[in-house]
Structure formats: structure tokens, C-alpha cells
Image 1: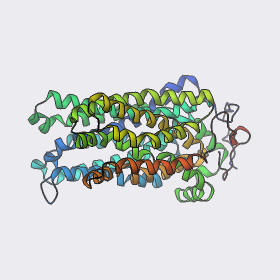
Image 2: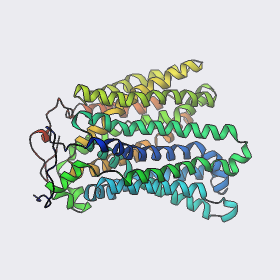
Image 3: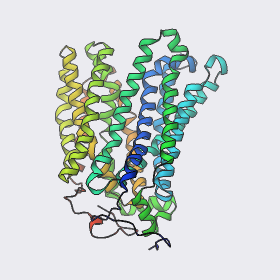
Image 4: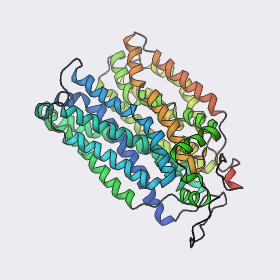
Length: 458
């Protein structure tokens, strides 16, 4: 057991064992934690929305169409994300959350600025698509490190009675980012003619993302380190272990937590389908105007942005986390198939009911799972544990969700989309029943004893 640093003042500790947080820094720390999540999802969604606009400017017509090349480049970001979970996440457990959060938002800002400033193919030839690939790799590695580091940071900065709320802010930020990206893209496409939009207008949303990333970097440079991480540095030698030893620690002592974390993340297949493919699904299967389906999806996302923090705060008030992912998963299993059947009925109101209903159950699932994931691991391996499990699931299920949905449509089985999502969520629901209750009403190991190097805090 490592000894505390000399001359270190005694750290205030709450009754449950979590270090107290200085109230004057809480707002700054929460902004520092959420802004990176906002920038990540903003950049991710803007690329997907505008790919059809900039594809001809950046990618040549070869064996693939420019749009296909643009989408393949988009997918590269998903491919490299698991690398971050295995390589960079352990660094956050060794050197601190703050330094990794600064590096990740810097990488995302750099990727956005590269995309915004890359000259067209007609000027620099194959240098243009190569720069886009570089930008997507940079963004993929950065975003693959961002999520788990931000979740750990925000939850660890929350007092015992606010951990649910603070953990929910990451998913609230992703919803806001998707709304912002959709809105900015809509403004650009509606105010510029097709020539100006293709020539230079599409660059503006990426430049905005880059500037937001720079602002976020400045905010994170002023934030505090997580108090739980600082306490862990003083109390355990695990923090100083190299990444390989830390991964062995996870596999040896926390396999159940890894499985539970992966299951908590797996319904992302439904999130990606609802966010990126549902408007196209409704357009293709029912002939609805794409503009109206995008508007309806924005309404549903607005509900998610409101419901997620409300559920996070409610979990703190009730002292219970476990019911929320269970209720959300049951809602998805029960509702997805009937909702997609309902889309066969005409009318904008029907579409709003369908998309809003889906976003409500997704919001209930999303609200508390970050806090649960964080509490499944001790601070010494928290970012590594979340990162390894979550990023593998995101790459396998999230990145492939629109592609698989398209395959069902092309095969003439549109309802296969609902069956696919329902099966995955139902399997996750079985795992949710094994989750420990990490809220105040549950029995937490940290309430009675400090974790050792090999204890699984649950």
C-alpha cells in the first residue's frame, strides 16, 4: 500500500468514502467534462449529415463513388476507437483524467480543423482524401478516449447524492450536440445555393467544431483533477502499473464488471439506428419527405435532452440506479417492433409519435448507465474498464447499425431492423438483472472500506 504524500492536507471524505468536492469548482469541472462529449458528437454527426455535399470536392471518382469513399472514411473513425480503449484509457488511470481529457478534445479540434481547411481534390489531388483519413483517425482515437474518461471524471466529481445527475450529463451533451449539428447543417443548406454550399459552405460547420474544441481545451486546462483519482494515487499502487498490467488486472479481477459494462453500452445499436437511420428508413419505406422526418427526429431528440438529466437526478433522489436501464430496455423490447409497424400509417404526427416514443425509452436507458459503469470499477482501473468494454461494443454494434439496417431494407425485410435491435436489447436485459445496486440504497464497498489493489468496488 502506497503511503500518502508528505505534507498533503487531509482530504475531506463523505460518509460513503467518496472525497468531497469543493463547491466553487463544481460548475467548471462539469463544463470541462461535458464540452468534450458535445464536440465529439457534433463532429461525428456533422460529417455524416454533410458527406453527400463535400464528397465530390474531396474524393475522386474511381472504383468507388465519392460518396462511398466519404462514408468509408467516416467508418475509419469507428475502426480505431477500440484502440483507444486498450491503449489510451489506461493512461487516464495512471496519469489522471484531466490530462487525457485535454488531449482528447485537442485531437477532436485538430481533426475538425483539418477537415475544414483541406483543399479540394482538384488542387492537391490525393492529398485531400489522405488528409481526411488522417483527420478521421485523429477524431476516432480522440473520441474513443473521450467517453470513458469524461464519465469517470464527472461521476468522480459528483458528491454522493449527485453522481447520477453528473453521470447523465455526458449523454445529455451528446443529444444537444446532435441537435446542434442538425440545426447548423440545416441552416447552411437552406441559406446557401448548391454551388456555394459545395464550394465552401460545408466547411463552416467543421470550422465551428474546431473552434468549440479549442474553447473546450482552454476550459479543461482550468479544471481540477478528479478527487477520487487523487485519493487513489495516495492509497494504491495499482495506479502506477503499466497498461498491460492494468488490463490483466481487469481480466483477472473484474470480468463480470466488463460484461455488465458491455451490456449497458450495447443498446447503442438502437441509438445509432434511431439517430442516423430512422429518417431514411421512414423515407424509403413509406415515402415520407426526408425534411419532415429530420424535423420529427429533432423533436424526439429534444425530449431525450430533457429526460436524461431528469432521470439522472431522480436516481439520486431515489438512491437507486438499477431500475433505469431495466425499464429502458423493457421499453425497447416491447415498443420497437410496434413502433416501426406504426410508421406504415401516413402523417407527420404519426412519425413524431414513433420517433419520440423511441427517444423516451432510449433516454431512460441512457440516463444512468454511465454512473453505473463508473461504479462497477474501482478508480484505479475505472477508465480502462469502461473504455475496453464500451469501445469494443461501439465498434461492433454502433458503427454497423445503419449498414445492417440498410441491408435489411435492400433484402426486402424492413421489419428485420426491429427484430435485430430487439434481440440485442433483450440479451442485454438479462445481464441487467445481475447488476448490483450502486445507488445510495445499495450496499457499496466504499461505504465500509477503502479499496485495495485487487478489490472490485461494487
